Image 1 (cartoon, rainbow, N blue to C red):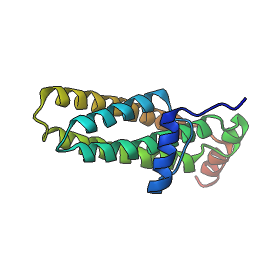
Image 2: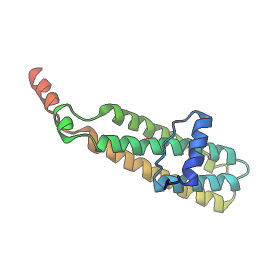
Image 3: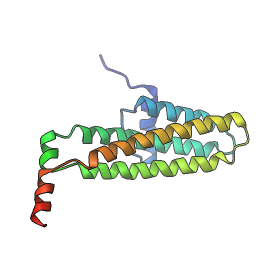
Length: 161
């Protein structure tokens, strides 16, 4: 029996294919909630709805990519990390995505000033806070994983002292 993908995943895959964004099939529950709430806000906010909708679609792809990158970094072999070091390529991509997320948070904060409806303003503030929390988790993950000990790193530091 085939397992069907949730409609959110299918719609994000279609949006990704049409927009040229990378497509990931495993959105986290947090990402699904944030993106769906942003889409709901976009539908309710007439003036800035298109901007919010655009941010939601872009953020869905980045958050899914982040979860894949975090899984890749976390599942790296202990021996490989000990001898060679941390997976700096994927950590660099995570940091790049973190900066992109922070730019989107700043954009949503700017859009917040253009909303006059208090209910919409409160809902957007809640989603901005959720994005900030997600960005903080990603930043902690990067910080925790970038300073790991490696034998080759230690050896070359000793060699060049």
